[in-house]
Structures are given as structure tokens and as C-alpha cells.
Image (tube, rainbow, N blue to C red; front, top):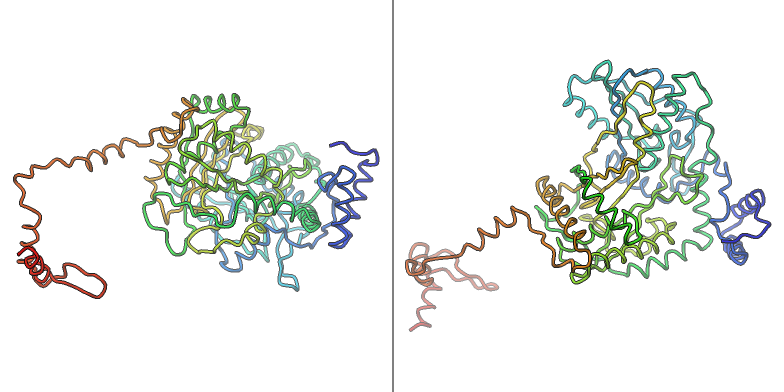
Length: 549
């Protein structure tokens, strides 16, 4: 977008500051005049420090705050992480490093109080004691038990801190670093920021360097205040109109074949099944993505849509997709709850090809990215779907893809660092597919599933079907998706048993003879009911004989 000569950084900052000082109606006029000059709100910088120490919570934070009031101590919105450290670890430097990280990131010093109107406010505290625990585990089982308890322990949103650390010693040269943050102050991207800043600060602590982590240009609270102002100025109405047109009024509930009926109230208990794609399969995925001019994310999401369509038989699919919400470069290094959830709707017909599904996903993703600022909470309120305690509104399955920077973890002097899977035992949705890739080209992920609905073995089979289906889709991307095989070995064995219906009927009595025998053995037992009328076997046998004679 071209910008007039007046748009020097200082003048843009002055415009942004003035925009924040205006009332709601004046902001709308201001934004319209800005558009007339070929600019919009994204062209203006977020003024640093405008939020101060106390400011309104963001819309996303507000939702989690209300959920915490309804069900205090729920670990569903905890973000745990674990780092295995092999080698000579300087424990004092670990503490020093995290103190510097907490000093740098205001979100790690944030708590939440209630304003006079009953809404939550975020309050940045000048400092808090470092929430750092030292633990010891005799074996892997004890280490895992400590990690599970660590991830599930509740936070106090009013008192804080809303993050914690623990260092488990397995041996003098073997430690596990545990971190856990409440989602209200962080997101998945933030975990990477936290660990990468820790690595840099640890290196600096070892070398007695006090200037390794410079101050950040913004705080999350500054960005949250700016988001509220922009949405209030009319941007929210514009984006809401798009999503209302895309999603319609009555979202269907996706019903996948499950091991148990959906309970009247979901418990949010869950588990995870980790997996990795082999190099050959992931290479074919990337090759098809290159041929179609799309990202690996698009190919993976398209294959997920095909799997869901084949498993459910439904064609109108809505999949929740987290989006980073960090369009501005200055937000990339911040810890905060930036992530937003979008709903990508797909019309997935059995006679469509995989290439057609990929193209549809690409178009849907492009439209979503152009309207990514509307908070998911406002979309739910506007669409007002019929609420049920048994499932999530608007969508029941999710897909998330991330780029991981594992290689940066190897910069810790004298240590080999590896990320470890850590599960807090929860599931926000019926089924969520998480995938990630790193600089080495490795592609892996996990299935997060609701244990109310699915057994572990069923998810193992589901992943086997997914890999089998994916390989066939990549082999014949122009074939109709309904033509591909989805049965596994166990499915075929069950079908063989069910279809083994051969009988020697010459040796079997007629059906009515079986009934007569039952009437003799259990004459008074209920045989048939229609409305309020009930007949015993004896009565039904008598009436049948009357008709026959």
C-alpha cells in the first residue's frame, strides 16, 4: 500500500496517540478519513506505554477470566512445557536467567482484578518472587508423576504469579526443566519466546553479561488496548459481517464415530497420541504443496478435512484454526495471549478431488487472514449458536500447525537440550490435530482427544487411517476422494465375520416354530408393545393362530 509523504514514523505515532484519545464516534470518523488517504489502522504504530500499569483485559483474556470464575482451578487452559537438559547445568544461572526474562516481559508480572463494572482488568506488577521449585526424581515414572502434578496445579488469577518453573534432577548431568503458564497471559508462540529468551539469558548469566535481553518496545497490554480501540472504530463490524456471511446461522455439530455417546456435560478430560511422519511421506506432502503453490499447512488441513468427511459422512465441515495474531513485527518477541481462533468452513463432497479440496482450503484461508482481527469471543456472541454443555459452539474439531525453532535450544553452553512432550490431561474439543515442523524438515504432531468420547486404541486406529488415506491422496490427487480406501486390517476382519452369513437352513426349524416354543416356555412374558397395549407370548400366539385358521 502506498503511503503519503507525511507518514514519517513520528507523525504516524502522533496520529495513533490522537486516535486513542478520541471517543467511539470520533474514532469511526478518524478511521474513515485515514482510509481516504490510503491508510488504515494497521498502518499506524501501537503507541508504547499507553496501557500503563492497569488497563482493561483483552477480549480473549476476558473470556478466560469469566471461565475461571465459573470453574476455579480448571487446568484446561494451562500451557505446560518441558525441556530435557543433558550435561553440566549451572542451577544458579537458571534462576538468574528467568529473573531477567520476567523483568523483560510484563505479561509474566501480570495479575487480574475486578473493575467497578465487574469486568476484569490486567495489572502489571513491578516485580514478583520467581516461582522456581527444585525437585528430585528417582526414575522416569516419578519424574512423569511430578510433571503431571506440576501441569495441573491451579493458578490464582488475582494473586499470581500466573506462571511457574520447576527443575527436576534425575542425575548430576540430567535435569528436566518444567514450565507452565496460564493461557490468560500466554499462548503457544509465547512458550517458544520464553524458552528462546531463557537460552539467551542463560548464556549471558554464564558469561556475566547483563545486557543480553534489551527492553521490549511494547507490552501485551498496549496491544490489547489498541485492539479494543480499532474494533470499536468500526473494524469489528466490517469483519463480523464477513464471518456471518461465511458461517451462516445454524452450524451443524460434527458427529464422529465414537466409543461412547456424547455426555450431557463435557468433562474436558483428554489425552494425547504423539506421532511423526516419515521423511518419504512428509517429502511427498511438501512436493504437492510446491506443485499447487500452497503451504504445507494447506495440504495438511485439506487431508484432515477429507478424513473428517469420510469418518462422519458430513459435507459441511467447520474446523477451528488458531492464528498467531501477530501481524506486527514488534509483537513477535512478546509473551501474551495473541492467538485468535478462526473457523474455516469447507464444503467437502465425495466426488471432489484432493486438488480441488486444497484449492478450496487456500481460498478459505486467504479470506480468513484478511479478517483475522475479530476476536473469537465476539463472533460467538454475534452468531449466538444454541448453547450446549455437551459440546463447543460453532466447531468441535481443531487443527493447529506450528514452526518450531528447536535448533536454537542447542546454543546452551555445555548442554544438550530437547523438548519433551507434556500433557495436562485435558481436551478443549472432541478432537484436535496438532502438527509442527522444524528447520531440519522433521514433521511430527499429536492428536488431542476427549476421553469422554474416544479410547486410546481408537485414536491409534484413526491415525493409521489418516496416514493410509494421506498416502493415497498424494498418489492420486485428481481422483474423487470418495474412491479411496479407508478400511484398516481390523475393519476388514470385522467385515469378514459380519458377512459370514452362510447357513444350512434345511437343518433349522422355521421362524414361527421358534416363536411357538417361546410361547410354551414363557407364556406370560411380554412379547410386543404398541402404545399402551401389551401382549404376552401366549396372547400373541393365540391371535396368530386365529388369523391362520
